[in-house]
Length: 218
Image (cartoon, rainbow, N blue to C red; front, top):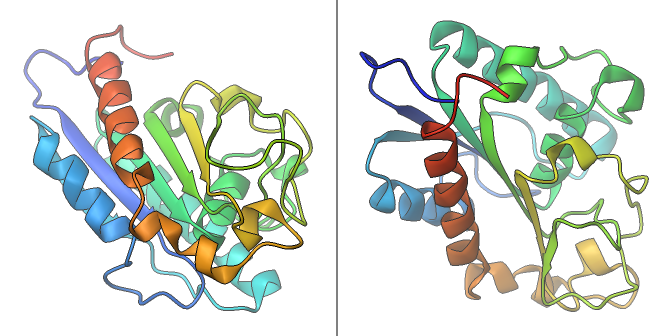
């Protein structure tokens, strides 16, 4: 996934905010983006996806999938050597997860565009925090979660297996979104102060470095 010799690496970070977070300045993703930018040796930008992020999940998630798929496809078409890092908090993780799937497997955004093969290949890393579709036992799960517990609306096991080398799904113990019944909203906010954003930044930077030194495309 290396860039052509005459082209400078171009990295685009895309944050997909959680429910009711402000459109500009996600409390979790903006600082996470800044952390990656500070440590990246290449030209790196941060964008927050424009979508409703409301409690009307049936509408909001679908609109988010449509907006993200269009943004990614257009970004890759405009800059074919650009690499992307996707970062989703809470509902934002749900949006990204649906976008990564083929249309036949989506539960939201079935009318949205599918990612082109080129677009999918240019996604270096995916970071989830407090994922409301967290599935127990996945190889990319990480954090302080309790094994055996999962969200109230988990994905089918293995649904994101094509992304497992590029994905880290962070779940804090007791987070009601990713741990289901008995969890708390307080634990859902733990990512604002715990070590998981720094861990995610390190993972994204590692994936970017690897992709910038590899062959053309996966």
